[in-house]
Image (tube, rainbow, N blue to C red):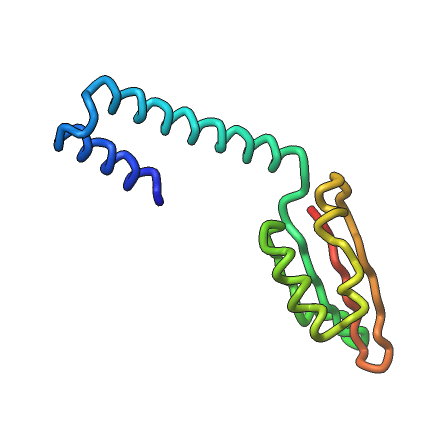
Length: 124
C-alpha cells in the first residue's frame, strides 16, 4: 500500500470514529518516521555501494560499440538470470555479492574472436 493511501486510510478511520484524533496523529507520525528511516537506509546503502552495472559490447573489427547498457543494481539479479540462459557460465558469477562488497570497476572482459566481439561488464 502506498504511503498516500495509508495516510488517507488513517484519516478515514478518524472521520468514521474508529480512531481518536490523537491516535490518528500518532499513526501519521509513525508512518512519516518509517518513511524517513527507509529513505536514510536507502541513501546510506546507495552511497556505500556501486549503483550501476554497465555492459558494453564492442565490435573487434571496427572498434565501434554495439551495445552500451546501464542497469540499476537493483535489477541485476533479474539480468543475471536472463543472461544465464544465453551464457550458462555466467550463472556461477555472483555479481550481486561483488557489488555489495563495494568493489567497483571492471568485473569481466571477454573477447570472442569467432564472433568478433568484446564484452565488458563494469560496476560503477
